[in-house]
Image (cartoon, rainbow, N blue to C red):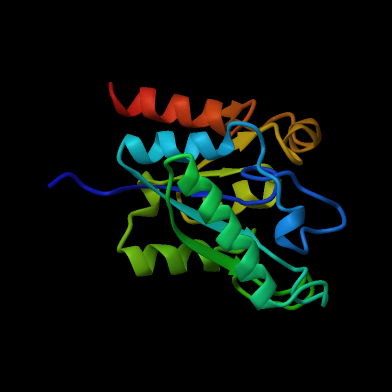
Amino acid sequence: MPKQRYILLDRDGVINHDSNEFIKSPEQWLPIEGSLEAIALLNAHGYQVIVVTNQSGVARGLLDEAMLEKIHAKMRRLASEKGGKIDAVYFCPHGPGDGCNCRKPKPGLLKAFASDFHADLTTTAVIGDSLRDLQAAESVGAKPILVRTGKGQQTLLNNPDLNIPVFENLYDAAQHLITRSQT
């Protein structure tokens, strides 16, 4: 049986449009064009898709975990309607000053995923739009990939020496990964 392959995706700015005001309800969760199709494409090529996301809006009192679950239910439903599946969602509900080990750039969410799925992080791509996504990936030996959507373009401008793959959006990154995996 072939070894299972995983892709870890940040949520806001990678799968859906981000907001400086936080995504606080399912109505505010709007997919980036092509992102749900990208998830389906990855699935079709043998990848399990896992979402790994900081959600400090919970700690800030902007939404509770029940509302966050409703947002994630919408994300999963819309991905499913495009033929895709999100196998798990890991989130950090803490604020920047809470000192937890799960808020990216710390590795807690990625390590929890690896433990739960018995996955090798060194063979796993992590796609994000912020420096902390990339730092979390690097801290566990995973393969960071930056997309220009969300905060990605600003991340690139602020860190011009990044030596990692950069793509316009999740769909382009997915196409690259599946093309590379077929060689």
